[in-house]
Image (tube, rainbow, N blue to C red; front, top):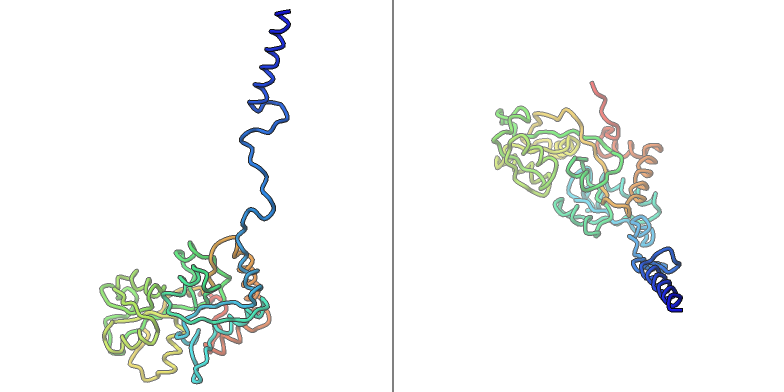
Amino acid sequence: MKKLIGILLMAALCLGLLAGCGGSGNAPAATEAPAETEGEAAETPDLLAQIKEKGELTIAMEGTWSPWTYHNEDDELVGYDVEVGQYIAEYIGVEAKFVEGEWSGLFAGMDSGRYDIVINGVDITADRSEKYDFSEPYAYDRTALVVRQDNEDIQSFEDLDGKKTANSIGSTYMELGEQYGASCEGVESLGETMQMVEAGRVDATLNAESSVADYFNAQPDAPLKIVAYTAEANRIAIPVRKGDDTASFLAAVDEAIAAMRKDGTLQALSEKYFNMDLTQPPVEK
């Protein structure tokens, strides 16, 4: 009898241990997480959905860089990038809202979410590509090196070593000057850089070939000259914040650019503002 009682006690003890240790019984393990209720996990809102919901695409640009983005005689914001931005907004089905600011603050505003996008003749660079995703290029533009008419010391980019240039803060033109050994003074507009070269406060400035040509058209008597161009053209595209929440928006921007190419709008705008077609990559010679 005592043996029978002992066997029963041992069996009960083993069953208890198995259940308590999450064995092959039906009881859930103690570490098993409870199922999430619907809507408990927060999802990152999709940027394209946000834009469509508010019915507005907020576009940041300088407004002082002709012919990309500037004010005409009636003080209206116009330019190649302005019309590109309007087309993209219409393609998405929303209104375009333009916000002007200094170049140095455009990307910070997009980073913080104040702007949905920056359209301002932005070059694709390795450094920028680490932080932003880019649309397909919608323009191609070389960099021009500008000096005073009486300057014979600078004939090429290599001659910038030890010289002083002026360019927009954080621009690829400032970076290029520094790569060639120049010390660069940061300013906020193309007009300022040209005036500083004219006054002899700096030795040179670097800027987009298209913008320099536009400046010379408006200021034919400016005592300046172009002494060199980069061999390759910069690829101009539209940067977008990286992330899964911006993927559908970037795809929509690419679709809009493709549509502009197909219907001839992009080329027409380029010829309207630049008097040339900058929408195709230059043919290698």
